[in-house]
Length: 145
Image (tube, rainbow, N blue to C red; front, side):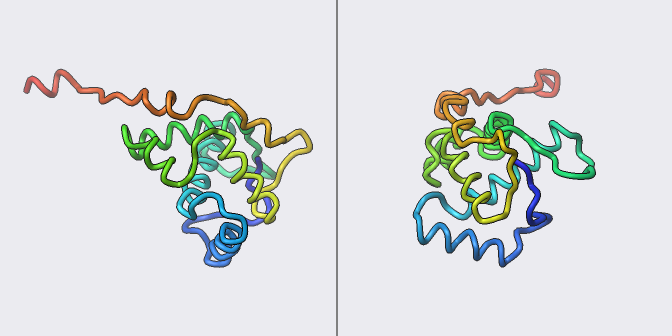
């Protein structure tokens, strides 16, 4: 997926939010907050693949790369509650991420390559299983002080 058509910088532009909300109302689907989360995950995946500095031209990531970035972001943001938050937004499988991405492509907010398909998001991982692997790492040296 390529963040190409309209730039998403800083907070989401009110026109973009309105466009997404209208699409959600007409089709149902995922919560508006889920699209903000998706945008953050896309930025994270893009930085991981291409580096943190914006480059010339489109910076493409695969559906799988985006899914893994979203998993990591969810765990870092909500810890053991990550699966609960995503379920509240009607996200139950990695395919749901793909449906959100392809809606944004259809709305002209993201670009795609010819090879990109919604099936790229199918069965990347089991969401509940992947989000249950949260663990708190304690710094033993600090705990003893």
